[in-house]
Image (cartoon, rainbow, N blue to C red; front, side, top):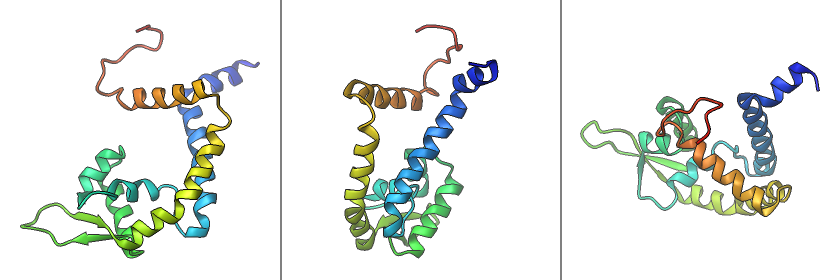
Length: 153
């Protein structure tokens, strides 16, 4: 393996970006017939089962910027999948999942399950658990004390 190939393989940023694009592509293909994008489903799922949520709450839950989440919610509202609720005394914008949004999540569930099963099917049960564990651990990395790359735990 060449030095540049080895460096590329060891680059976490590149590897996570590649796998993220691949996973999103798989879900986008499955959701295409429903007219929804893979990046929109998690937003809808954050609203499912809640009476309402603010832009900040959804953005925080999905590790997103509020401005990005506001644009996503606006698009989802234009499609009738979420509804912006009236603001109380200048409070933050609040959204709720509409019946159409709930129906969309129900219709896309088989596609979501099929893609996830296909992707997880490439991994052993132990690898599946490890992947989910590592994702959860890395998401909480900002809360932990930073480690140098070579420092063991």
